[in-house]
Length: 434
Ligand code: GLY
Image (cartoon, rainbow, N blue to C red; front, side, top):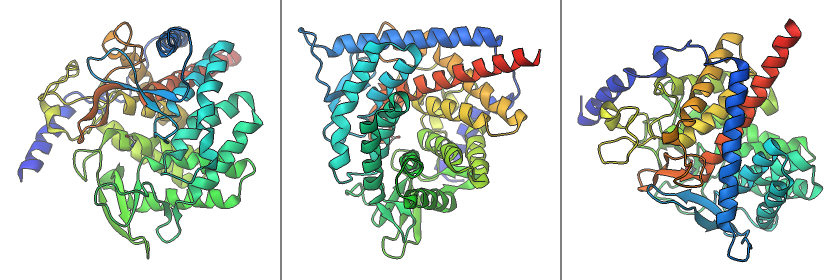
């Protein structure tokens, strides 16, 4: 056993001492109406944090620069670091997306107006060549939520134009979208990253809403090729797959943001779970549903008992980190609340598609995760206006480690809304059965 394998074995032994897999059938806490009240309180908390953010974004005359979007609050900081959205910054859609979800939860027309204003500066993407695959993240969060909630025809046109733009990155030889057209490290060839699965929604949606049917074919080719090559043992995702750009053959799987090429980087796995669940929603193809369960089960197998993963499941420090170690230090493995939220949201959807036993497991994990994130040590609360603390962006680069990050808040509020809807529907069902 070499050193890496030895550290890995220690980490696995440590993890299994407190993983969720030890007790996969523990019931969700509380009655349905108690869960709905708790979710209402969570959504109220998000709404009040969002008002704080909006107040902080305004200058002394009350004016907001809508081309600046909250991106992160680093450990120990108290205010959002902002990024310009007119440079196709990949996180630029999450803040408008949070506003759209808050509007959905509250029906507050002042929030609707802010959602519109933060969405509009991204409209330039409809007339701009693709910078990279993140175009999907940018407009699904902003324009697609906006269109879903308002039916605004102008939003639909932006989405259709952006879907065509995203499709220009498709390489028919490899069968996938080129995620990073610019030089990112020395991956060579045609690179595709797991995160890219999320962006297929733009293509599926466009094909269903007046766009070319070829957009659906591209999305399915990407999902199928990714399923064939982008995973190693038992449904664990590589972060990056490299294909030959000329003949398209798979060259290698590796990592960019994970610990090592074959470790399970938590957010990469979360994109896979969410991505294949979404593929099933749009296609009803059984293979995507089976695969969504396979990648979800690989993640759940070693998920800590509080439902929030460490940034990478194979970080050797996990062996000596307890679930209450949330203060950054060289000996503590950081957690990733963002991956927990992406997965919680995906599992609530996946539960609708699977058999009742599996559905119970998925719903219980989502519920447990939301219970954990309700605890004071996970919340921005008084210390900063983000909803959540303790996400990890790019650990190998030392960037956004143990931070509040806009995408964690986005998938958190999405998960809360999905969980509340699910709980209300099951309460209605129970009433009808009486
Ligand atoms: N590259 C997107 C992510 O950090 O998940």
